[in-house]
Length: 134
Image (tube, rainbow, N blue to C red):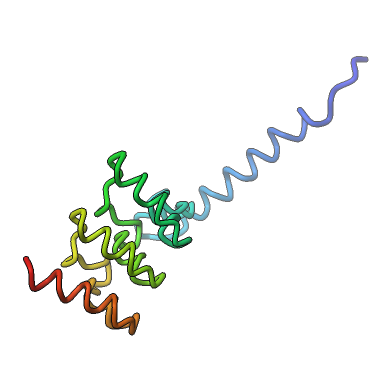
């Protein structure tokens, strides 16, 4: 008799179990469930750079054409991330490059409300000034 590698015998069984588990999770509810709701999406490169305070990387990404108004799966824009992570230099840069300072997230919370919650006088002033100018 020929020896069989145990790995190749086990893999199909594991794949079948995993796919059945995912199917059970998707079809066990009466609501429509999107794949993005099952798999957590990684943050965008821009949002990641903002969260780290990496201004050089933010500039690089904006210069190559990354959409500065693209919201994540919760409706949070890069400008909102910059406010949450207390990055006034990045907030100023994003506004100067056309970030939507009137945007709201999926819950209806506006950029200005993010600024107020941050309690950063510098960020509140940047957002207030942008709202007055335009």
